[in-house]
Length: 180
Image 1 (spheres, one colour):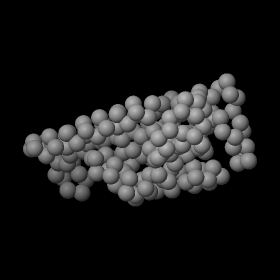
Image 2 (tube, helix red, strand yellow):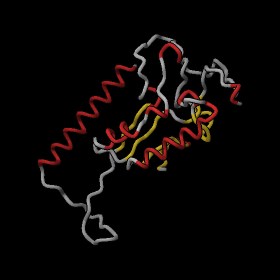
Image 3 (spheres, one colour):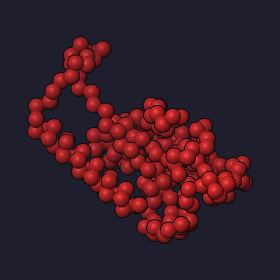
Image 4 (spheres, one colour):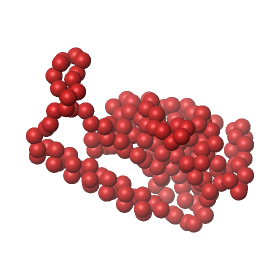
């Protein structure tokens, strides 16, 4: 699974770089959009970078079937550093979509943080399916360094993302992308 996602990311990066090089070689086309400040045409292009949050910063290369977080590892909100976000922005990205952030059914026991356990029959694999959201007003505790502070860590990620000049798309009900 990690190999497939890595290959998809590499393909996306190569495609983006090729488009940027092609764009530099060709004269820029101006769109009909007009800036409110200057009445001159401006070019607006939205480029969304979708990233599976729990894989992004995971430095553990073990990929054991039915492996635990301790064995296979998991990326964290804090793995999106200023440097990482600038590198993403340098690809020409304007928006980032952190996939798998809303709280979904999990195997891990977080009852000491006030999070109820999930029925094992509902959980897909050990990590759960990020598309089987159980609470749109909370975030996946697996992605936090400290599950008790998971919302504060996510808010810090939002602030860091905006500070680095990127906008955010997030999951919301009915699979729409809401900009924040």
